[in-house]
Structures are given as structure tokens and as C-alpha cells.
Length: 347
View 1: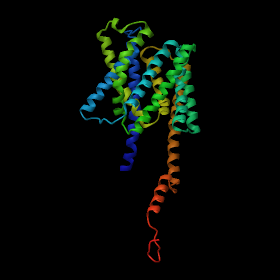
View 2: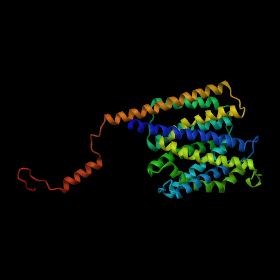
View 3: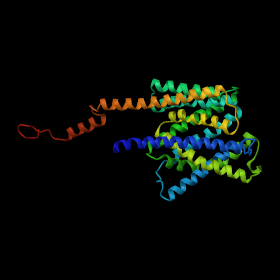
View 4: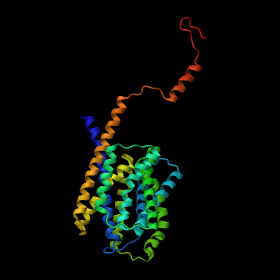
């Protein structure tokens, strides 16, 4: 009974992490849609808003550390700076890509992150994927592509920004998992260390980037109680979204986060149809069904791969010495006098 509870507990935690990510991500998209759309409050300062998100996240992390709810572990400053540069490049690249490209090409660039993450993990960590996982990834990409991609117009500037955005976002997500494993640091602890750097840099440079994107200065925008409410709501949801992103990547992988993360796309399309009277065509519905089937197949394939690896590790017990063990054994023999067994004398 105790073993069953131990096995079910991680599964419940995994589902909880994904549920937090999906709910908070969909919620923040809906809140931002009301905040930033022309039919809402026309707050078109996306980069600065992201700076607000990380500022609130950093504040929550600071309070958590001060009250002892989380422990602070050492991560070299240069690694935090490097990660923050990559993450901020991802945010800026995505905003520029959305501005310079058609919505269709923007969606294609987001879909390309899955194979890019696979290739980057293969290059950086020599990670290999089973045939079933590869097939599931293809099914998800096709399904999401069918339900989201419409017009596709490409230009050189937009293509370059999309490439930078895809590469930096993929690298950022891989680095999250790598840093957690390298320094044995929890998802929230790592986020608490990176959030202040990202918040500071985005709040300094964000208004200039937003001015380039929209031609408007945030200082000239007229705030209202409605705008402040949705900014606070967006920031609150961003805390859960950021924490759950680090949590999911730490527990699973960047590829799993990308594949299963497209459930958010399906939820956004459905809620857009329910709440904002967005058009939902037969093509959209078929694409969503195909994407969900791909996600289910992917989850099954990953579980089969884990069980196969576990069986292989059990069926092939360690029966050979490592180079380090051989070296230590040799040193022990060389330093120890060899005794004659019969005479009991040292030679």
C-alpha cells in the first residue's frame, strides 16, 4: 500500500505541474488579450509588461527566501547573466517576429521549436529519441499546424528574427533543465535567481523596444483602474506560469514541455470561440483532434521508453570496473607489499 502511494504521488505532482502551466498560461493569454487588443485597453507594451511579470516574480522569490519557505543555492553569476541574455533575446525575438511576420509564419516558427529542441539536445547532450516519440512529435506538429496556420508571408527581416527567436527560446528551455541538474537546484529557487536580472534588464530596455514595435511611449499611455487591474492579474498569473514552466522542464524535458505545451494552443482556440466569438472551422477542429491524439501518443511513447530503459538497466547489472576503479585498484596493489602465502614473508 505504501509503495502504491509513493508511485502515485509523483504522478499526481506531474499532473499538477502540467495543470498549473496550462491553466496559468491560458489565463494570462486571455488577460493579455483583453489588456492589449484594440477592442480592450490597447496596452501595446508587451516587452515592458514582461518586465512587470518578472519584477513581481522576483518579489515573490525574495519574500519566499526571506521567510524561509525556499532555500537559496549558489549558482555562478556568469551563468545567471548568460541565461538572462538568452531568455530576454527569446522574448524580444518573439515580439519582433510577431510584428514583422504574418500570423501564419509566426505559428510555423513556434512549431519548429519542437524539432529544433530535439536537434539541440542531441548536439548538446547526445540525447536520442525512439521512433514512436519521433512519430508522435510529427503528428502534434501537423495537428497544431492545421488548426493555427493560415496565411504565410515571409520577408528577410522577419525570417531572421524568427530564427533568432526559435534558437534562443529552444536554448533557454534546455538551459533551465541543465542548470537545475548541474547545481541540484529547485525550479522556484532557480527562477528566484534569474527573475531579478530579467526584470531589471526588461524594465530598462523594454520601453525602447516597445517604442520601436508600436511607435508609442508607455509614458504617454493613460492608465485607468481597468488597465491596472488587468496588469496585476497578468502579473499574478505570470508568477504561476513562470514557476510551472521551470517545474515542468525540470521534471520532464524541453521537448516534452514543447509537445504537451501545445495543449495550451488547443485551449486558447476553444476559449476564444466560447468567450470572444472567434471563428472555429472544421479545419480547426480536425487539427485540434489530431494534435491531442499526437500528445496522447507522445505521452505513451515516453512512458514506454522509460520502462524499456528501466528494464535494460536491471537486466544488465554492473559487471565491469570503471577506469577510476581500475586506477585505484592498481595503486592499492603497487603500494601494498606482496606476501608469500606459504612462508608469510614479504617479498
